[in-house]
Image (cartoon, rainbow, N blue to C red):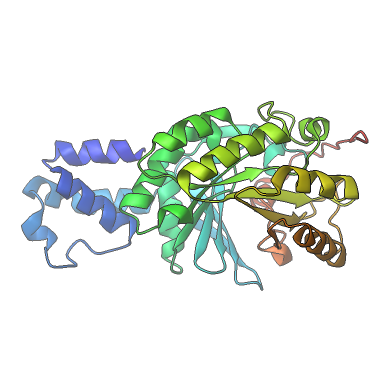
Length: 344
């Protein structure tokens, strides 16, 4: 089910634009239809009122809670079931945020990611994305939505942008609090400037070396780190939102002085923030998490060089919550695919 399918169904029941807006707003904000000054029984067309209970049931069952795994950091990893029996991961973040999935699986194949090991299974619909936010709101307040869970949003862009539009118009989410995370796809930079709701961007950088980037992200678009930063800077200046560059710290892979020098070269003077996240170790993969002291020293060095850097811990470390791990444990993890990186 897509959001546009819901709109068409409402219009077929006699709903005018204001009625469609009201029903969608009630859904995404978890609000009763008879709340506010205008009661639904007086305001909505009769045919729509008669169908509301059925529609509400369908919307409420787009996802179902299979399990919840709270972390000591205030986060919680949720495993949600979809109607066809597949599952996605949604993460409740500290400070009123939620990270949602845009695909079941992922085709990019990032070598350090559990989700990428199983490939793409199917796209998540725009309504299923919004339903993840609604599910999170049943548990706590949500003021920020990050499209950074399972999947590559650029590979499901129409659905992602439809969900972003609803969340930014009827969902009570500020536009800069909607964050689209991507490995870098030219279609994102072409589409977003023309959208009514323009989200903030998080771009997966991970290395300043083109050859190493091709190894780590083997099926990502062939953008060099320099090209990615140039595209990001253009969007940042046009939208007024700084780009969040994502850097997963891999011990002995992308944490050397040569990479730090490259980061300074790429990002100094840019409208940008570097999120540095020590790797969440996955069994059977050759990557390792650097020590926290090492990560802290790296962030401090970048700060001294004039790069705004935030050292972040992946939410849910204590519950092995890296993207895809919860789903893999539930479904039975795929066989190990060991990657041997060339020294760059």
